Image (cartoon, rainbow, N blue to C red):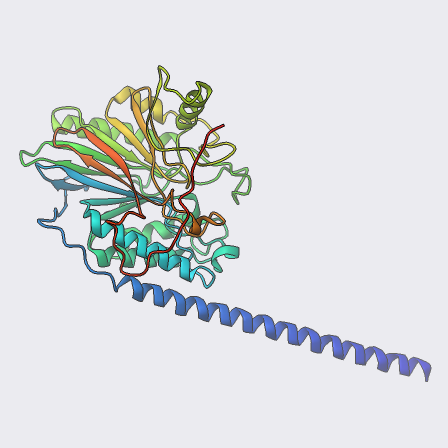
Length: 413
């Protein structure tokens, strides 16, 4: 009898435990369903918001054509205006909806006011980090941003950043690349690049004059993401441009020069900075924040702490190749959201841009000194000038209310 009572008691406990587990499972399922529903509804709302912005009115807008090599080419005898945007960081999840909307508002205001011939986004359009965005879906952010750019009606292209395809994201780098390349967009000039070259989005866009001579080449390179020793990026060990990418760049520079009958000046865009920018900054800092024989500060400040420049941790010969070929006069980066300085290092301008990010850096949505864009004016003779533009200027009129921020100061110790 005693054994029977004990068995009955255990059955009651098991039944109660199963009931509790069932309730927990139900709560979890309801939570997942609620977050999925909130994400879908929110993303649809932001896609709808993207379509509320007006198409940018550009007088005599340049329309690119593909040349015999399959490269997009603009034709003009006037200045060619490039806008660099970087680190948009659209989460695309239920936790980031309001910050995603702010990012859309900022991008639309700056593109509308500047009326660029080409927008180059140097990576991290998406930010599918679940504890901040509320999703693993890295395609959502890309879709929202693409919807906005197509509505604005301005030609654009991208280089991929480390956050555009995390190892835990739903979609790999190839899928994201195919989205930009094969979705039938009218204004997106992104090309996935040669199949036998590492990375995605290694491509070139040219500017030529009415005589048919190329006056500027604009190179986009995939700066990769994390090293094999740090696949999740927890240790901030970033990869470098790979050797066959450098060879592709070298081959393309020479081919374009040969076909043009003369060397062609060029600019380059990528996400993660070259190690030479790190070398340049610390040479400048070690000299009391004064120019040196190798380094000339052009503009901007370094707002990141600790390492300052979060470049690739390995070695590559891209910078040496740039010096050798004497084509690329400047390289433009994103990645480090509070760095916005440009420095000439051994005669080559290495430049950060203002970022857009409202989401990734804790508290950055309330700060404003680092938010904006870079404007690059390419002259008909192939020379260029670049400068930063802060988003919180009055000239950037927003369709929706512009948030109040603190304009933080940066000091060097």
